[in-house]
Amino acid sequence: MKNKILKAILSNIGLKIIALLAAIILWIVVVNIEDPDRSKFFTAKVTILNESVLTNNGKYYELKDDENTVTFRVTAKRSIIEKLSNSDFTATADLNFMSSENKVPVNIEANRYSSQIALSTRSIYINLEVGNTQSKRFSIKAETKGEPIDGVVVKNVYASPNVITVKGPDKIVSTIDTVKAVTDVTDIGKDITDAVVPVFLDKKGREVDTSKLTFSCDTVKVSVETASAKSVKISAETSGTLPEGYTLGSVTVSPETIEVAGDAKALNKLSEIVIPGSVIDLSNITKDMETTVDISSYLPEGIELVNQDEKDVKVKVKINSATTKSFDIPTANLTISGLGMGYTCEFLNPTISVAIKGLQENLAKLDATKITGKVDAQGLTTGTHHVTVVLTLGQEYTVDTITTEVKISENNN
Image 1 (cartoon, rainbow, N blue to C red):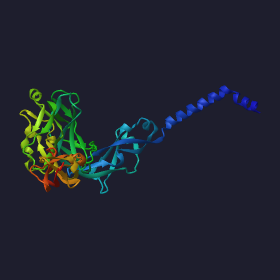
Image 2 (image 1 turned 180 degrees about the vertical axis):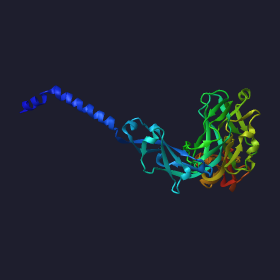
Image 3 (image 1 turned 135 degrees about the horizontal axis):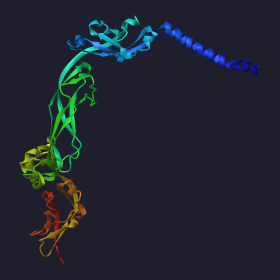
């Protein structure tokens, strides 16, 4: 069966191919003679006309969902439509005909064969988002990033102009909080001037999209002044004497060093900044104190702080106050002097209770069993007597008058 079918197909194959070609040629001839109508879709970019209708009234517009192109159907003879492309059509939207819903009709025009084509009769609209515009002036904050070479600091940085006017949709302009112009000073060793594009930030420090805004200037000049610098130590002196019973624990400053700038020769002579004693008068201090000092007041001529915001230095004074502690000292630790010949002396109590005043840390060092002292028995005769005890203590301790009872007897031996 297959052989019969194959034989039928291959039979007179040449005549069959000629017949097929003739049919194709005949169809082409008929189509070209008839030139039937055909339809095709084209796309054109929309041009907005009469924008001043909005802009003159302080308004702006945006195309919703990026509706900046429209697609439409064109009908024409096949010979015409095959010659057309998207560039042969113009789409315009006149804002004079904008509806209350912010819809604008789109007018399509053919640039070629306009009399030989038919455009779709379907009405085409674009949707606009309309809002208020705002113009606002902002101060430009000039800043630097990076660090200069060692021994050089940024002394001053400023922008020119230092004010910029921004105009655009209110919903964008109102989000701007800060305008910065930042230039890189990494490894510089001298003054520089740089052209910088300002950066617009919102209250959270995020960059604002400014593609729909206009500015009074596109770039600003940021000038950077440099100076020689070094870090120097800060110390504080004191004046006056603390009231009795108090001692000076320590005087500390924070920060302990600060960076200053100025002439290189002047910097070489400067090794320390001293806050004078007149600032810290100990005469009336009875407890820890802290005060803030403007360190810039004590800088030599020609020297200034690298960062003026760091001018306040805290000075802390720690005062040690005296306290009293009771000790039971064995009378065996006391020696007797001045006792006359033929007499003996004995203490009637094994210990004496003594209140010793001093700093707490010093009192903690005392051991009652190791405290010694003496009594003077000069001129005493037999009987019971109250004698004064003199303890052997350092100057850091004070003791009120101490007495104890002794019994003096004749030595029969």
